[in-house]
Image 1 (cartoon, rainbow, N blue to C red):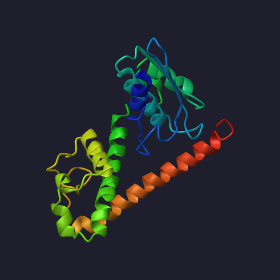
Image 2: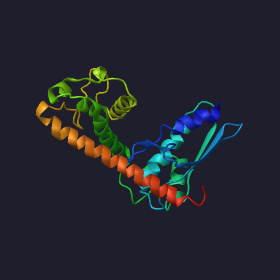
Image 3: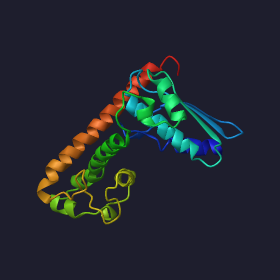
Length: 224
């Protein structure tokens, strides 16, 4: 069913800062698909003043994801209730890019910003994958020798591979489990501090996500 394919496509769109799909964050207010293949998606965010760069990324990514679905003849993606809704919606529809959408205010496109948060997510993901191994008694020496192919399969591992691959970090079976944001392998002596940073990064991302969910629920409580 075309609607299901469109919804699945929206599920690939991440809030870059929270690293969760917009479908799971309840950022999709509505999604309809006509018999002619026109997909109309309305997005909403936790506050009126959510950062325009993150907001633009999500709307643009939703447009690209939905437009790529076989059978979709036209994608209409609109961000509602945001101080820059008109600029963002117009820029995404025109495929203008972030700089041309915010002429005189933006100096560069958002690829580098996306990469920064994907690298943060990949660092946080190392804690998600390694935590159970540490709890089971894995030593720093054992952890630095582990590759992704030797780690038990899990959704957390799949997520880590995807985040790494998106920014060109090693993500195949031979890739080390523990790496620095630049891809360098973590040494045995660096393991405790590295895992501490990874855990703090994960907690920060998850806490931010819970905060945004609470804001969204409060903002739209009267209409839900």
